Amino acid sequence: MIKKFTFNSQNILNELPSCDREFLENIMVDKKYRKNQPIFTESTLPSGIFYMQSGKVKKYKMDNDGREQIIYIYNAGEFFGYSSVLSESSYGDTTVAIENSVISFITIKDFNEILKASSSFSRLLLKSLSHEFSVLANLMAVLSQRTVRERVALNLLILHDKYKVDDKANTYIMLSRSDLANMAGTVVETLARVLHDFKHDKLISTDGRKIELLKIERLIQVANFY
Image 1 (cartoon, rainbow, N blue to C red):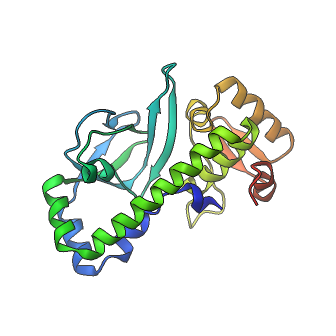
Image 2: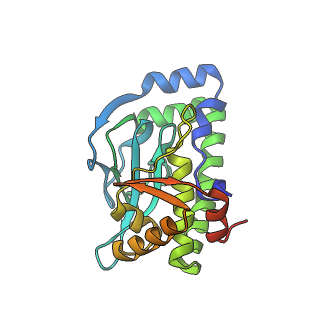
């Protein structure tokens, strides 16, 4: 179910032939970003593409009321910013680190070189881009057709997948309440009421900003996805 709402660029590096992967890793330049530091902003021109080494980044647009509409959360292993490079257009959204992150940068020149040199990379990138369009269509449908309660439940399930660490038994979602509200397309006050109801029904537990999902199957039902 969650795959309908997550990009799949995490598979690109793993599926590349070793020589192409080494070339790509050698041209990456790592940079540290502090929490709340922008990576790029809407309407600016791209100078390359990005790859998440660690941390998390939110991708959002501003609505007519000046509120953020968070479209996606990137985490380790994901490429981003490449659609604007491929279309030779300015960025259509803004990306900001939501925790301290390490992000690799690949210049347009190097990016074009590997596109020409590696048919595997080109194919995987186009496959990923095609899937992204499908994910964005699914997310827009959720925002327009689902209740706030359903949207919050779905976004908690998406975030659970994002914050999951393989060698740890428990998963804690560490997103701020304002960012979670902006993901679900609601206001913080409404979000607080929905989270209170979920907590009362023992679907989640909270500790400060931390949220842990206790009954995932029940939340899938609440989200109205089977």
